[in-house]
Length: 273
Image (cartoon, rainbow, N blue to C red):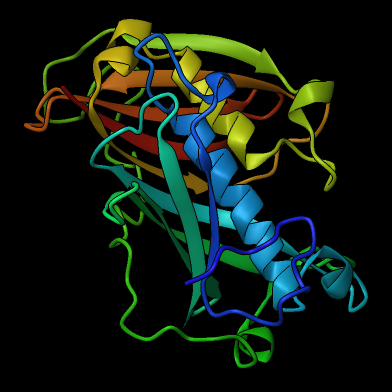
């Protein structure tokens, strides 16, 4: 499979699977010399945007019909975090639809073509005037289905609903809660006028003990984006360790709007040494 040209997404004709190859650079690693979780999200976002352009369902194509893509949920499993200087290949492809979701999968492969990071995402098509989701079939019917090409199974559908953020899981001993407030500022907000999906991941990383992230050789991350965060809005970030999880260091994280306590996102992060 040949590499695609992000500078000219439509230049080589439509492709079922989008693929780009490049080295892991200095700006996407942490103190462990390995790729960060937010960098994985950045790679996935850029590849998805390029592939959407290639398939004629990109930003300008959708705006002509008064529609926009919005990421609703994503699950990521990193079996190994690529190292600084390592050559990686980032791939993405559509996988049909589930109810209101348009499914898109991703993986990151090493030089031996072994997948080291895998992900599955669910996107909504939003009517810009009504600010309501539309059924994706009208768009998805014209896209490659890539039957059988599955990167990852979904994580929990309703993340953190069984977590009491006053301290711990409802059926487990109470543990301390970490709380921090963040305000959506200029560098957080993207073209669509709300906080970019990658910035949420950076916020979450910032409320986890750095050494836990640096020591993690593997990680599983699941997030549901439930309400957009606009410029100037303040968010309370809450994190609680999932005490009865057997996988290692596991955390439930929730973001709530300060103004009305509305949930903006729910996430779960599992770290493995």
